[in-house]
Length: 399
Image 1 (tube, one colour):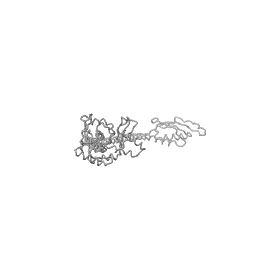
Image 2 (image 1 turned 180 degrees about the vertical axis):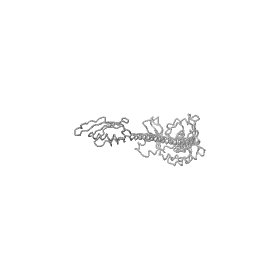
Image 3 (image 1 turned 90 degrees about the vertical axis):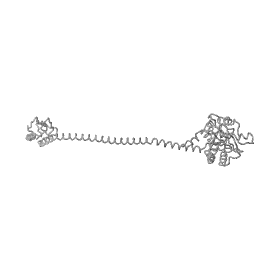
Image 4 (image 1 turned 45 degrees about the horizontal axis):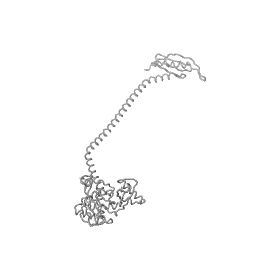
């Protein structure tokens, strides 16, 4: 689909026509490339018509004249290069502090022009072509400057006429850096399609710019020597964009199934990961509940054991507190199995005797009460004297 379009722009030019509107008519120089790409281009045909076009004329008229002449010779398909008269542009020699090439050279020269015009805003709207003048100075350049709108107007006029104008320039004096190639191309006798009565000098002045224009298609000619076709670049970009779009579509459909499978696998992985996270959370919750239940059971057992063990003790304390009565204060209670050791203080022996009597009558002490020690002690300063006693008894908790 795009093969013919790309071959038009990407394949090297093998045949071209250089055009120069001289003061006596339009000069056409047909140039052919050699079979060897490193060989010398040669002029295959030169002719001049009587149609006169000046720099101030409409570019549409020039395109119509060229179209008529090429159609007559069935050469409208050939790529064209046009060398405008020197009056169509502002030409001057400029010198830079260093040797540059390509777009850097053009930007530097435009900057030099802007500096000379003290920042003229219209400099940015101009286009420049140049060629080095090495015979004058290694950093000296011959420049031609035209408004960008005029350059676009020339290209638009030829495109509207159905012609393939691809190079636009102004020929420098003597052919500039292409002078050796021009001489080599003119080495053979020049075949003229129309007899001229002008002098040899006039013929050379008219032929040289046309040949210079045709040699702009030589692959070694730098782009700084001419104003390129923006329309060509735009078409090439559009074709490249279309080709990239088709290629992207092919690649997309080629890997669509793999992408679908991959997305399905990713979705399944995410779902499985979510399920595993939920399962892990449930498992952790179950483990926590199991551990909590075990702790609760253990606490219940401990509490039950404590309650079962503390029930007889509470009954014993209640019985001792009831039997003590007034005037008796228990200070210590020790147990060794069923044996009790009761220690306390009584205000007098009568109170101690009364308590022992009540304990003797209690069924919880079947073996009676034994007085281990009883002695009268003086109290501290300000306190009354008391009887300190120690009792022993066997306690039966089942009662």
